[in-house]
Length: 122
Image (cartoon, rainbow, N blue to C red; front, side):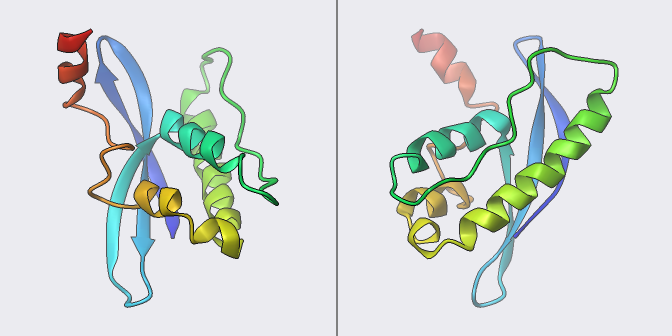
């Protein structure tokens, strides 16, 4: 498992970073998932209810700065460590929620073009 990098995506005139994560399973099959910081945060909020879960998610950014790329690069490294630490904890790694987060077909952790549906309903 590795956070390979990030790119920017625009939605409703807001720009946000999308993190590309390479996931490799026990059979050596690899696939890519793309997650926003808010997806990591959602997973983190869920896992906080599990005993022995003591991990810290890198903090949310308060304000934007001119070092946007440097910030996102640093966050890639932090999120990579976060996921590595998470998967090293057996009782956490086996959670269905974690596998949903790492799944290409996740409905809960997907985003992007489909959000127009949300806007229509709102």
